[in-house]
Image 1 (tube, helix red, strand yellow):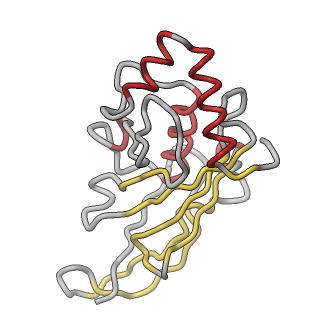
Image 2 (cartoon, rainbow, N blue to C red; image 1 turned 180 degrees about the vertical axis):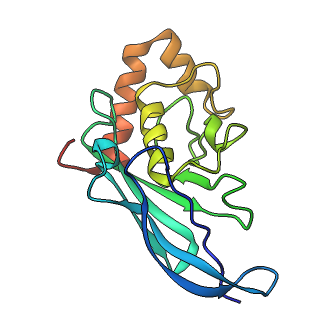
Length: 186
């Protein structure tokens, strides 16, 4: 049974997913039109929000993607690319995708194993969210950590962020230099 990739788009602006319609079986075995999409590509009319974002299928699995995101400017993550894994579950888009960093990041909201503590990936998920919007929100979180909702295993990063911000920035930059890919800047 071929998986059916569910289409979702932003209706509030010019962005939409690229894709083509094909026939496939859903989880109940019935035929329906499913949209096979590249959720990281946006129309030519897209604004700057999608700059520095890219993604591709892993092993032709519509439910498993690799993403690459440029770190936010004016942060210890600037001018470097960060790799993420995006997995879509069987209830997507009714439930959020699982998004994890593959690149190690020193951050109060990101665990050493790549888990992300972000409301839109948890209790505030909205099926109308697109993957570029999710990645943009992750990029924003990297620039502006949410100290009120840290990742449970990132207490050291949180304490440094709150108590010794300069040291936090030095460590975050050192991790970025060691683990992230150098980019051309935004």
